[in-house]
Length: 98
Image (cartoon, rainbow, N blue to C red; front, side, top):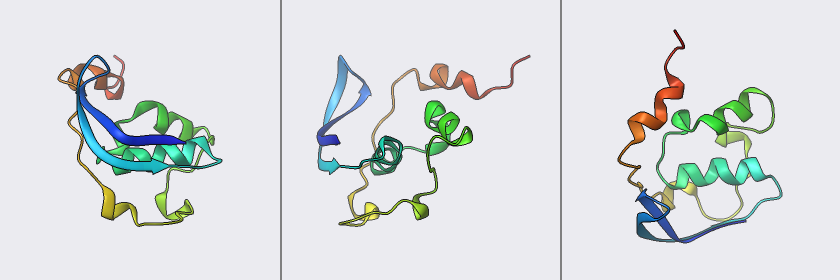
């Protein structure tokens, strides 16, 4: 279960800004819960390295259309979270190794 009653954006966990999201995601599938949560936070799934690697190795389903969503629609609860100020440095993993 992921408690998103009050989320955090920006430079968390210590210097982040609270987000009044009031959302909860529950699943017996840890990967599906994280995948749905990223979507609810308005974050591009393509930049979340560990979730992508898990999908590529078959540890979870990345396609939201194949995840059984019970309850309200994801689209009705998306809040765009601000990313960390050094997100460009965090995304170095996406660049080709030379």
